[in-house]
Image (tube, rainbow, N blue to C red; front, side, top):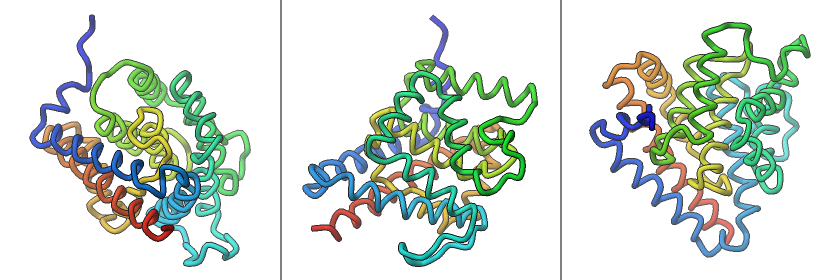
Length: 249
C-alpha cells in the first residue's frame, strides 16, 4: 500500500489539534437548534456572506445589501457559485466531486467566470499547461480516496493547491475558495456549507495572500502557517455560522 502523501502535514506542529478544534466547531453549528430543521435558510445566508467576502478578496465592488442589484461580474459569479453549494444543488455537486472532481471544478469555473471571460471556450477549461494538468490529476486522486488525513487538512490542501497553481485563466480565487467549501461538504466536515471562513480571509487578506505564497513554497514553515491559518478561519467561520443561527431564533 502506498504511503499517504498528506500524512506528514498532520505531524506539523499544532496542525492535528487545530484540525480537531475546527471540526468540533463546525459540528456544533450543525447541532444548533435552529439548524436541526432550518439549516437550508442558514446555508443560503452563509452563501451570501461567503460570496461577498470571496469576491471582495479578488477586488470586486461589493454591495452592502442583499437586495441590491449585482453589477460587479466577479461578485455575480461568486454568488452563483456559493448558491450552487446549497440545498439540492450542493448534493448534486458533492456527488460529482467525490466521483469526478475535475468536472466539479469545471462547473465551478463556468459559474464563476460566466460574466468575466470574453471567450466562452475558456469557461470550465484549465490552462493548457502540462504542469497544471499533472497537479490537477494529483489533486483529483487525493479527493477521491488518495488520502485519509482529517477533513480540515484536506480542505486546506485543496484550497492552497488551487490558489497556487491558478489552473484557469480567470477568477481562480473564487473557484479555489468555493472548491474548499465543496471539499468540506463532501468530507462531512461542513455538510450543509454553514461555515463562512471567507469572512476571516477577507479581514486578514494580507496574511491570507502571504499564506498562499507560503503554501506554494512547499517549506515546512510555509505549509504549517497556511494550514493553521486555514483551520483558524474554519473555526471563525463556524462562529459566523453560529451568529447566523442565533439571528434566526
